[in-house]
Image (cartoon, rainbow, N blue to C red; front, top):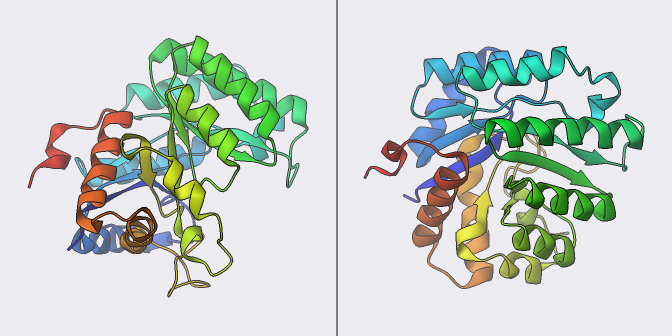
Amino acid sequence: MTVFSDSHVHLADPAFADEADAVIQRARAAGARALVCIGESAATARRAQALAARHAGFVFFTAGVHPHDAASWDDVTDQQAIRDAVDNGAVAVGECGLDTHYDHAPRERQLYALDAQLAIAEDIRKPIVLHTREAEADTVAFLKRAETAHVRGVLHCYTGSIALAEAALAAGWYVSFSGIITFKSWTDEALLRVVPDDRLLVESDAPYLAPVPHRGKRNESAYVSLTVARLAAVRGQNVDTLGWQTLRNTKELFDLPDAVLAA
């Protein structure tokens, strides 16, 4: 059985409703050693925190404001919510970022909310979970600001250019791949090879983006092993070795306890 971690899962999403605990148990049975539950709003961060409390040492959580909701960013309430979450165990700031594909929030507000969350991450010394879509120039500029602030993070569910991935790697960041890389439409195998072993993460982004052969169904963390297998095949690596490597990388980025690596 391949050991792995899920570095980005939306277990607090309504899609899981009362099934989150069962999904977590299936992930453990499939070989997962750690799940990072994303809190992309104050409400989901609270639900993610409750899940992490019930599954201590296996489920961890983050807190931030997604770019889709950046228009409503509030310097007082949102900042306090993130800081309170970190005081209660959140391992990262985010999911935050930039998205000009959907443009649910004006670009200026996305940039403002993202920089506000960078300031928090710098102050509390936590990494950032970054969403970026069709915003490469602004993301490169942000990565430079993050490097100056000595803040690392991860480009999650990455499907962008090699150039942007290399900019993130140069800034000390990680790059995470999801089940998208198993789709027949995925052709950028060079991108999957450019990320060094020690900067590589895998994720489900569940309930979205279920890998083949589950495409079109609700995704869950147990399926991350399929993404690991695809990565290993493209990179010419042993699947079990790669699974352990991505687990170590998740532990290192999010400063998870040593126990997640216990055999």
